[in-house]
Length: 406
Ligand code: ADP
Ligand code: MG
Image (cartoon, rainbow, N blue to C red; front, side, top):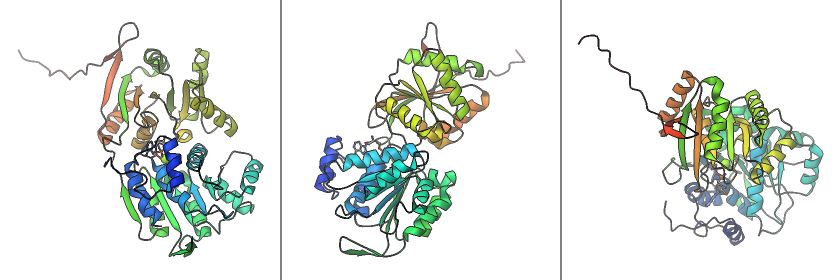
């Protein structure tokens, strides 16, 4: 990365530069360097960049630049797969507008009282961050209009389309008439602006791109050393029934201040949370069966540093960015490679060092983790518990050649 490039060089508005300065962001990340200039020139963007590389600002800055703060029309739309991610994007965009007068950003998502959201939409935001289902809901109730939207971004596009939102998404893009010309700030553009941002580019993402983008600029950010978060990865193998005990030991030995523990299922997530509380730990969980308001409260306490252990499912945690997570523990080996990448990407963010543990409870789990390590080219150091709450590098036993003859 060329260290000399600044946000100013990329043509970012002075009031946004101020906000970035306040956030301590000086140097644009690679995806920001590559996406901001063409997007400012109204190019469609298809960006693939690993988690934690700054995609939110990469699309947020151009979108904020394109909207007209004098107008009370809804002009920009960001779609996100989960409520938590939508809330987080909204917070980040609001942070960027700290020095922009009259710019309003609202967030709408399923699970929250619709009247609260209707009141926030009555304040006439120029940008709305939304989950697809709830956006359609508001559209059908006519509490929000799509006809003046000229800039759209799908964040975590792969996951969103993967989660069964394909129809909702295409319906929304059709209603917006994304392929029709539009005039913004007195300048005519052949179509409305669409950005697709994702950690991976799936078939569905390509289909949406093919259907709704024209002459798009493709950006690929490789998981380079520099951009790659600094995470030490370890695994520990224990009998299935001793996983909980192993988790408690890891927490005790590590003395971590903020840990996220991942489980693949809601049931396991809840049970572990209950067990840890019974063991006297200050832990709580978020998963799909927990009420939205409770989930938000839990996230808030965790972000404020008042909850040292958060237990989460993959979906509930998607895209969540909390500073200062020093450890991620995989209570089970995730089903898919990119789940592993997303899980451990919750730590080691913004150049801080992080630790990731994976607890292995069976041979298939071990095989799966080996495959993940191979595929992602990660080094995952196997460890074992030593005497008196210590950890040691595991000695990998090589199969002994059979010696039948002397
Ligand atoms: P992604 O969406 O690619 O996973 P995010 O947009 O959530 O990544 O950004 C990850 C973290 O990096 C956030 O805390 C964000 O505030 C921070 N960040 C983004 N851009 C920069 C930058 N240019 N310099 C420093 N920190 C940044
Ligand atoms: Mg993101």
